[in-house]
Length: 477
Image (cartoon, rainbow, N blue to C red; front, side):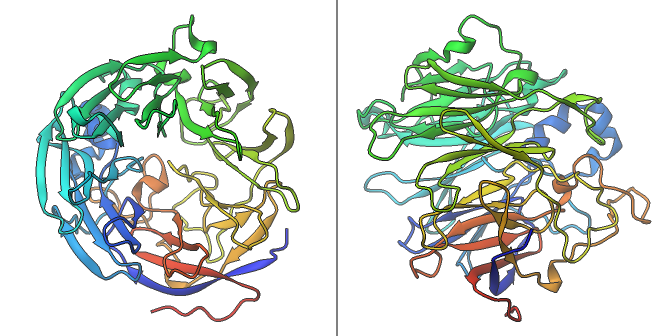
C-alpha cells in the first residue's frame, strides 16, 4: 500500500517516562499536556499475584504517581508527586483512564488521579493551575482504575465523580467483583454499585437531556446519582462472567441532527453490539475465531472485539462507519446497520527496525487507535493506528493515507534490561508496551491553525507532526 501524504515532524522534546498523556485546554484556554507516570492496573494486580510479584514485581515502584503539566512544546509548568527516575523500566498497563480534568463552577479546574498508597486505594485531587495537592481521599479498595467526571446536582457540588474497577476483578486472588464508586464534588462517597460487565472505556454523557450526566458502565446505564436505570436487553436475563464477557469499550453515537443516541459496545465475548437509548438491541455481530495468541493466555484463544472508532472513514462518503480492532489479529469495517464491508489485518511498521527483544504482533495497547477528524479538509476522517510499531494513518478500508516521518531518536533499544534479569537482551515479561516499547498518539490543534496536529510519544520523547504533501528533512530539536 502506497502512502498518499506525509506527516512532517515540526519539533520534538524529552518527556519524563509517562505511561499516558492527555490534552487539556481549560486552564488558560490554550492547549497543554498532562503527563502521568503510573503502574496503572498492574499496581493492585501485582500486589495480590504472588507468582508474578516474586518473579519481577518486587522491583516495581508501587504507588507510583508523578504528574507533569507542560506546554505543547514541552516546557514544564508544574510537577507533582515523586518522579520515577530509575535505570530500569517500570511496569505499567492501561493507565489510560486514571486521570481526568474536572471543572467546577466559580472554582479553579482540577486534576483527578487514581492510584494507591501503602496498598490502599487513593483519589488525589490537584489544582490544575498550580499542581498543588488539594486532597487525598482513601477509597474502599485499591483497584479503581478509571475516572469519569460529570454534571450533578447542586447538593453534590454540581459535579459527580465516578470511579470504576477493572482488570483485578477478573482474576483469582482479586476481590472477585466489579463495582463503581459514585462520589460528590468533594470526594465524599455517595454509593457503590455492582457492575459485572464493566471493563474499559466507560462513557459519561447526558442521556436524557436534563442537564445532568448519566454513566454507561459496561452494559448498564446509571443516572447521575448512581441509580440503576437499565441493563442492555441482551444481558438482562444472563449472568455476566467478568473475565470473558465484560465490555471493552462503550462508544456513544449520535447521528448528525438526531437528538437520540445509541451505544456501540465492544464485547470481550466476541460480540459487537449496537443498542438504543433504552438498552434494546439494534443489532449484534458475533466475531468468533480461534487463533494462536503468542505468549498470552493458553491458546487457541477466541478472537474478540477489543476497540472501535466511529467516523466518516471512506473517501467521498458522508456516512459514518465503525472500524473494529480484534486485538492485533484482525480488523473489520462495518456500516451503521452492522453490515461488514471489509476485513483484514493492518501491517506492522518499524521504519527504524523492530527492536530485537520485541516479538512480532506482541504490542497490545489500551488505546491502540485514535480518530483523526477531517485532517485533509475534505470531510473524511482518518484513523491513526499505533499498535504495530511506528504509527500511521489509514482510511476505513485499511489503506495507508499518511506516513509520519521517522526521526532517528525514535529507535527504541534492542536490549531489554530489567534489574535482576540477565543483560543479554531478554524479551520483556508479558506485553512489551507495558515496559515502554511501542508508541502512543494524541491529536489536537495545539498551535491554533485550525487543524489538528498529531503527537506521538513514548517514555523518552514526544514528536509533533503536521501533514505535508511531500517528505522533507525532519526538524527536530
